[in-house]
Amino acid sequence: MAGEGHMNHVNSTLQKNKKDLLDRKRLFKNKQVYKDTTTGLKFEKISKEKLEEVKGKIRVKAKRDKKRFNLIMLFSAILVVSLLYYLFKDFSIDFTLFSRQR
Image (cartoon, rainbow, N blue to C red; front, side, top):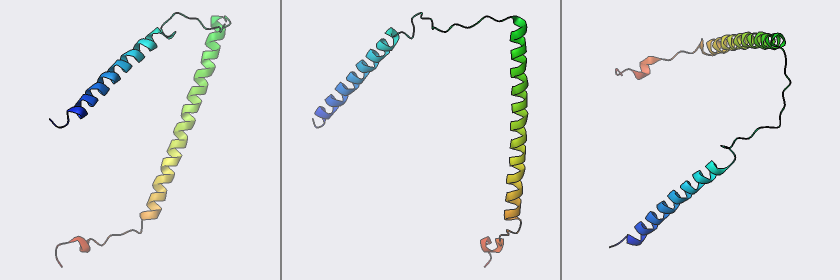
């Protein structure tokens, strides 16, 4: 039959790809990703009051940044809408071109 060599090549390629994929998965699992390792970083211990103070500062800064972002987005939206309005306020389409009556 015609095409048997082609189909044999396709089947062998698919089997090889499947084997390679399984080998890669096994290799990944054997790496140190799943092993228990600790980093060399040492963090200093601070009191709960100091921690709450730092968290408060972070929250205040996040709130300020969010307000600033919302304000910028509002002004940019107003700017875009006004630009579009001024660009297209004199734009008119003569719809008689599209009517069926000629």
